[in-house]
Image 1 (spheres, rainbow, N blue to C red):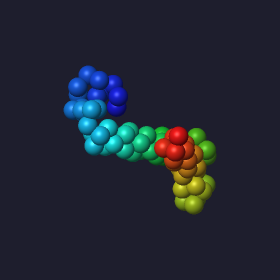
Image 2 (spheres, rainbow, N blue to C red):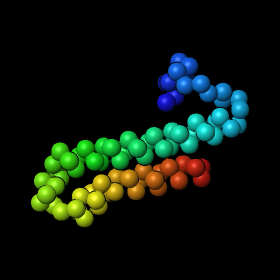
Image 3 (cartoon, rainbow, N blue to C red):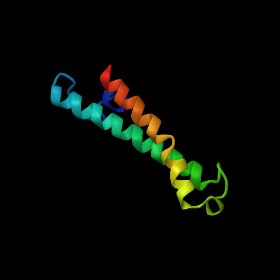
Length: 80
């Protein structure tokens, strides 16, 4: 997203506090969406085993597993 903002594909004025906050929030949301997509693709392609053999609960846990650390890192990053 920083690359897109750097080449003016996304109109962001980093001098405005509101734009900086909105851009930061969008980056965090985009990161979580990427983690969710990656975990879902791993699950559906059978990286952890056949999804039908694992069951819905196990599949859901395996999708949530990489998202929780991403949330924790995001929260800790906000505190620092």
